[in-house]
Figure (cartoon, one colour):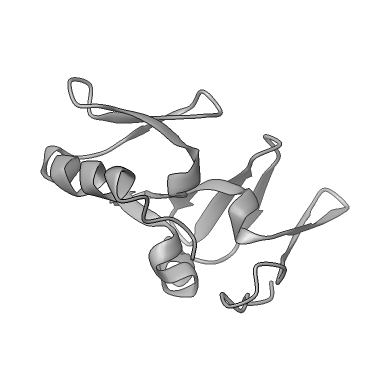
Length: 119
C-alpha cells in the first residue's frame, strides 16, 4: 500500500484481494472498519478490501479527510447522508449505517454543516 500525497487527489492506494489489484483514491473510500490489526476498506462501488494495517495508521495517513466517528470506524464525510441522533447512527449514501457515541453529536453536525470535506 502506498501512502497518498494528499495535495494530489490522483495519488492512489494499491489494494489487493483474491487476485484482484485495485487502485483507489481517498475520495472513493466510503468508510474504514477496524478489526484488531486489520482494516476493512469499503469503496463507493461496494467492493471491500482488508489490509493488514490498523485504523490508527489510516487515521494518520488521511488526516482530516476522514472522521473518526467511533473507535472502530473512520468515515468519509462525502458519503454521510444523515445523522440519526435517536439511534446514534450515520446513514451513508450507500445505505449502510455506522454507529457513533452520543458525545460526537455536535462534532458531526458541525462537520456536515461546514462541509469539512477533502480540500
